[in-house]
Image (cartoon, rainbow, N blue to C red):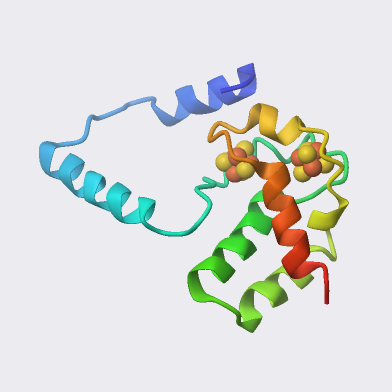
Length: 125
Ligand code: SF4
Ligand code: SF4
């Protein structure tokens, strides 16, 4: 968490918290192991990075397009998705590497590098 708003958001999530059962924990661990083997970027789409982006890049959506490409290889879906996305938000290639997003990302993702990768794939058509 990077600010009071995120803290309040998390407190609300855990109000009336009930711990997981042993069986649920076991299943969760299996899911985590399976996810760690995927070649995808582990963005949770929390959107904490979005508001402060000076060029209005919809960062989790760009990552989502990139993840789809990494998972399924070249096909039209991620390019179509990205094309629609950048009609209403910034292109990955417009990233000015200000670092705002990385300073608030709870997953500590290398967003600047990721925007470069996405731009090389999706902006050069
Ligand atoms: S580093 Fe790039 S993506 Fe991140 S907030 Fe700055 S301009 Fe936006
Ligand atoms: S802050 Fe990090 S985890 Fe959250 S949406 Fe942005 S890139 Fe994804």
